[in-house]
Image (cartoon, rainbow, N blue to C red; front, side):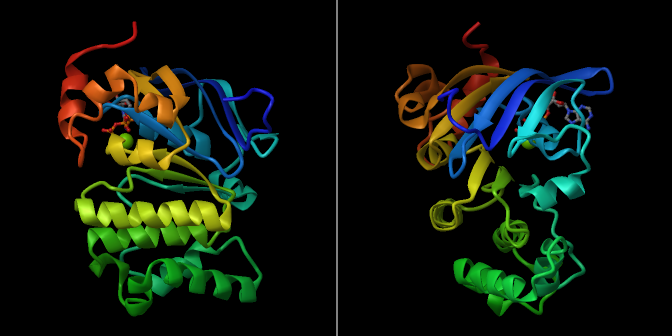
Length: 260
Ligand SMILES: Nc1ncnc2c1ncn2[C@@H]1O[C@H](COP(=O)(O)OP(=O)(O)OP(=O)(O)O)[C@@H](O)[C@H]1O
Ligand SMILES: [Mg+2]
């Protein structure tokens, strides 16, 4: 990735701990405006922790997170959302007792432009028509796929410049996964929203993203444009073993340490 380019997100040498346990060991990465970037890694590699550190839910012991030209270290997650950085966490976390529509309105809590909010709700219903049908239903009653659609839509309601997506395919059928990733690509292309994508399904992540980082035990061990990553033998063997799910490759990955 070009150092000279004006990065939207630039993460430099972050180190993040859970108490005495160091989860992230000096990670540097960047996302340019309008770009889709993916982070691949086995279970426990630190993918979720990176996203939590970027959005301000966790504070790194060392290193910097620059977003839109500003160091956002120590800034509350609430203000980070106002700056245009939205996180769709692992497991979706919609408000189960609120309706679909109320969840979407909650996503727009930082905004005061009622017309714009209404327009963006229509935009979300355009991307995910099932949400319009379920607008008055409690979010907790939606299927897993519908909750994922709602979680992405709720983040879109804040008008983000960058979306952090943590495993959007988790628990979804291959067909639904394809559908959701189709919409993710459209959101990126049509709204110009940059995306930092953490995904267990390496096959679809590498097809969707422009650039990728491979994480192992809290460290970046490889990075490249996705079209090049897809051609690397190690990636093919350990991540793309099974075309649909990537699962076989991933299990084997866990047993072997690479690129040391
Ligand atoms: N709340 C926590 N307390 C202590 N350690 C944690 C906590 N959450 C995560 N960890 C540890 O931090 C490391 C990174 O975890 P993280 O959840 O970021 O990995 P991940 O790559 O997202 O994994 P997965 O693919 O399973 O979602 C792991 O060793 C994990 O055990
Ligand atoms: Mg995770």
